[in-house]
Length: 327
Image (cartoon, rainbow, N blue to C red; front, top):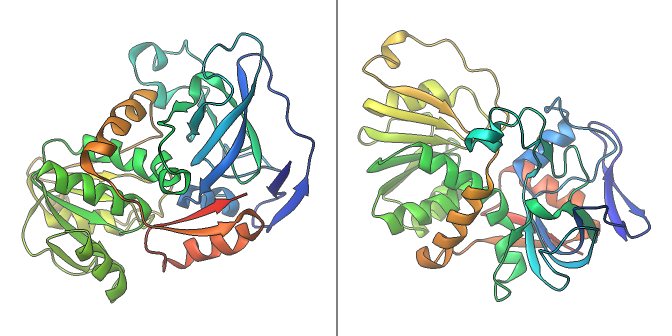
């Protein structure tokens, strides 16, 4: 197999030939068809996540075909198309796992962070944490749904029944969430980097009602603001934009420090929430919505060996949608 390996924090991804991995009990080996690049991969590369181990093969938006199953695995069967998301393991017995909150597990494992991920031709995953996929789904188009889609979905659900929604940072997650919001009949406002007319035009092409600079004013008060950009200064900006009782939800795994802000921004029963990881229930409900909402992902394909170029493109913020690696 071929893997793009990150040996240390900040280092480039290096192509490495390895023997095909053998699945252990409870695991399956998957032949990767496509793996999207996520901002979380950049955080792994940059050393922002203390739980990450090195060397590591990044990548957690994986679509592939099961090739082999370890002892005790009855599903998924070889030949089945599956997705492999960020959450790759939970303990199953802590207080969070026991109350339907496996995303907060005390002893989790994460694909492409604590266990090798999908920037490779093959990977091994726990069978119980793979996501069954419709065999008719196109792998490249589906890959971004495995994190940008799932985290966006969880973030939107955390916002509650908001009629007007602001999306801060219009990248892979927001371009999917915007389509879900429009299908649900919500009004959507997109906030991008100052002066990024290309991103604002992209947002308008997906049906958002308004698109403008994140350091400017919202055209009207919002019921909820979803923050996908890892910029802590957007939290007080979003609080200024939401009406009384409004909710600001931070959808990223890492964010720069939130600056001090006056209590008046929070007063009026406004709230700030974070979203951590995802659950298998999130995946089940989201993939039911995907065909109903007619979600179309916008992607740019890179050969696996060009993973560094794909990462650089994502980091630049110039991508419309998501970069996807194909072995």
